[in-house]
Length: 299
Image (cartoon, rainbow, N blue to C red):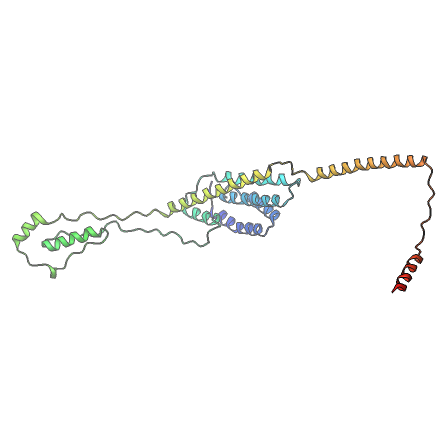
């Protein structure tokens, strides 16, 4: 698969638009936009961008399904679409890793949404492997012991040659004795500096870390969707429509029973003669007035 800089630049301009629409909770528009970009993509588009688009389609379907009623007919198909695109995004991650340093760095910046943009680029640090050492020169015992001690204490520091003014006077016989017995061997090997990894290897390592985290996140979403697709059924949770139908059937049966009882009572009352109703007497305040007069007279 040949990945060109043109397709990479096009996808980098489209992905922020997708993210903005999703964060604005326009989920249906986000789905249509990502599907349009997927149809326009070709073999030149890197698999990470296709995984990114499938991931946002799945997130949009997942959010739509969660916002629906628990007994909605569209809830289960929407969860199935979310699972389908989560699996498609996970399948895109199995593609081979690109070898180009520029492409790796570009894709890493697009996928890594949690880190801030404008991360400092890696600088290739090359250090000189050959360092100058002390040349083998005739010196006194003091000067040679001092040079050997300083070289053993600091391995990465350059060896310094003592100046001629500080050299003590020595005879030719002393020189011969020193050459044969006390002089250390000449320093011919340079100390190697630690080799720093190349920018491509560092970027590949970060790329693999981000892809592993992305895959783990996709598997967590898939498990969550599958759990919501098949919720645990309990006796307390019933379909409200079945509950309404049961209540209406019960009310109808009770109404039929009550209606039959009323009809039977009416038939029985038709056979018996009606009793004459006596009119109710009106209120007569006379006895209360007489009682009040007696009470006032006693006072």
